[in-house]
Amino acid sequence: MIKNILFDMGGVVFEIDKVEPYKRFGALGINPDDYVDLYTQKGFFLDLETGKIDADEFCRLLAKVGGRDAVSYDEAQYCWLSFVKNIPERNLNCFTRLRRKYHLCLTTNTNPFIMKFMRSDRFSGDRHPITDYFDSLFCSYEIKHCKPSADYFNYVLRADNMNADECLFVDDSINNIRSAESLGIHGFLVEPGKDWTVALEKKLGEEA
Image (cartoon, rainbow, N blue to C red; front, side, top):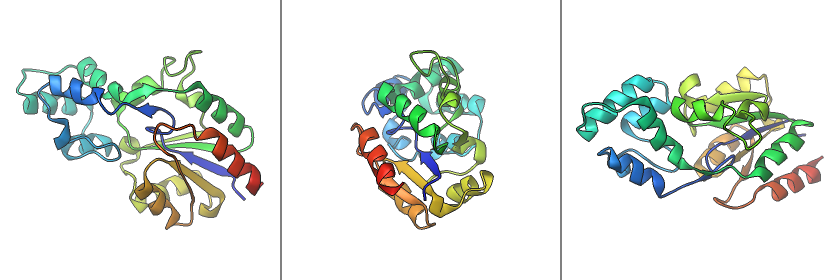
């Protein structure tokens, strides 16, 4: 029986903009293809998401690579937030409904720039932070692990004392899904840009 639902953030909680990040990082002299991927980052971008460097060091490296004197926190955050195309109200409503019955976890590869916004009252239209929709948040830069590593999922399971076979993992990356399933976690693959809420609630209803 499913008792816990683990949700990815980019591509699930919010729809991803695939164009704007290239414009914004490019304006800072960064070639996004060298560092940015829809599912995993590379180089010092990955170091940020695994917590090996902090926001200040990331800004310093952005400036160095881009050939600039400095890059401010606000400039870096402006670039990162361009990944957030839209946060559908239907998703938030779904979280609210599901949380009445299940333990909900946010399980995401992310960084402090994005999470400062997500944890603020700017996250939803009615001024609720993301913490109002989930029982636990597992952010890669805070737990020092990134999906799809087994270490990431094992950390999450231990932290909230969850059994793998009682968890459903919702993500838009097949590699992440396969990694979770290898540990006994049930997977639910989301198609990018599509409404996943109806199919998910139907699946949960069938298993109840």
